[in-house]
Length: 442
Ligand code: PHE
Image (cartoon, rainbow, N blue to C red):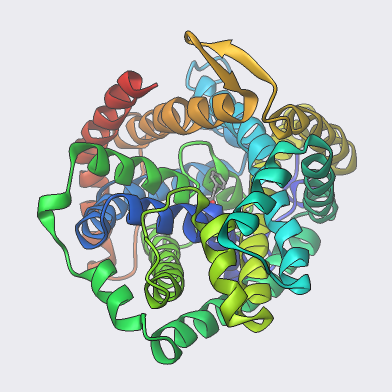
């Protein structure tokens, strides 16, 4: 298969925006603030930053090297770099399966976010309980949830079907600047126009180590994977569309840094509002869909509508990368056309997503009754991503030869070697620890 058939990025900046678009998603705007709230703020943030540096950046580098060198989807990549029958291909398979399952439930949450753009336009009103009940009603109504899931998956498919440059790159170039502008606007508003700005900054940046638990550390590590889109080959796939080799270590650092800064700004925007109205930052998963709408009643549509647009755009640029991993496998390995791959696989993910939309449909899973949504979330985040990440890191650290390219400057070479060193020795131990611990949590 020639590169022209697979597609490639039109520019380096297009690739960076697409990769940052993949990384910045519900994980940054929804999950990071709420877990920071649950685990008590500053100290958790510090540990999270450590995880990004010791685990995130090295695995991101590993994925970019695998993709950039092989110019293949995650399954084909291991075949090209090892051999036709290499068992390492299983890592790629795990990735394709993870992309499929994550997108199925991700699209359901993203669908709620899309629904909330329209709720925000109408304006939030009523008591705190009534506003909370609006979300419970949406969650418990399969029809409404399926409707919004359909809208969101439709958008995702419409972008991916256009291809790497005309679909993914083009939309990343449009959506990412809007996303950053909205986020900066909301953070600016939070810091300078609410009385909660100072409190928010001290909550996020003043560490209180007495609140730090082992569970918090492990969550920080697990989240580092999810937020950077690692462990399932999204960055292998995006890296494979690079025409020329870039400085992979610098690119990995840039993407990780931007993702982290965006998560921190989301934290600032959300916690300033929450502190201004003396609400609890630790309200968990409901932070976005129940706590914030109560505050939006006071701030009005100028804040609430951009907020849900931000959340939806962030989710969309991540969803396209999840679908692209699956689609790229069928294009490269099965020789399907992009249109066929996107429609059939996007359609299949959509149908499986319908199972996730039915919160009330529960099946036995490890002795407990769980919804498909919960099952997919648990098996992907707790098992598939860490295992995939561990294998990717062992592959590049210990198996792959010639991983350090000749670099122009001495400083880049030293940095590259440092990250590879961390990748070989520290990252596998850290990831193995999260994984073993998660085994108990299930
Ligand atoms: N990184 C995305 C987020 O933060 C989620 C994601 C995971 C996207 C894995 C692609 C692959 O929401």
